[in-house]
Length: 247
Image 1 (cartoon, rainbow, N blue to C red):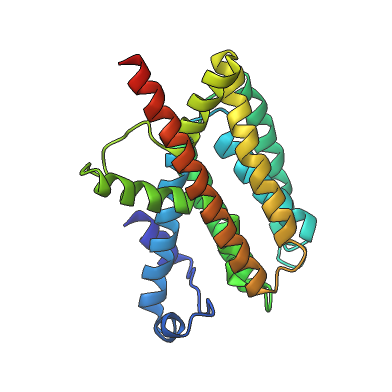
Image 2: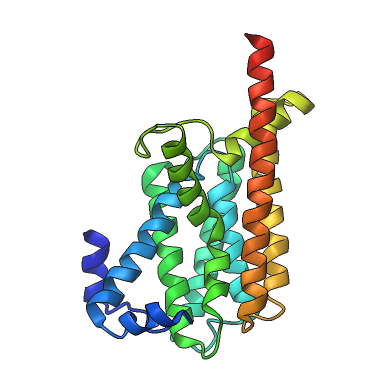
């Protein structure tokens, strides 16, 4: 409700996402406000879901902002480029302390980063002509898909989507690296988040080659989802085998 009020007050809407049947309804302001609210809620909750490793959320959104700055997408939008630069500096500062276990985002931190980054991307999309909406989707794919996948997974195993668990992708990756490498918890924690963010950085750099091509962006989204699904299955099986050995 708070996000909806914010969106309507600042008239933050989307009129075109290149999906015909949705674009038809987006012509109506109320539907557009509801749609934007729904999208931001997915990003906000997804950001909280992936906030389980040091540097994962902060690193992810720092990468997203650096990609936007590198492409110069905020150059012609009033004061937005200076905002992005300040944003990156602050996140980098916080990231250092997060990596050494001296600072934690908490729910409010992850919610804020998801909301602020989502609003920035919508603002840029509305001001850059011909940019693919799927490029914006790709930049937010990880928190969004983590949200969707977690809901589906919990329903599949007869659990409430509202209940927390330790079966998110980053937690399974941490468990795998901990067993295989036998590093300290902090080192394994940092390594896990670095690997996830490195994968996303490579994907975003490839996507940056042509931000106007929806075909490229959709292909990369599918690649990310398939990679996530394949690795999740492997990591989940590994954890299940370890539990059976212990029992």
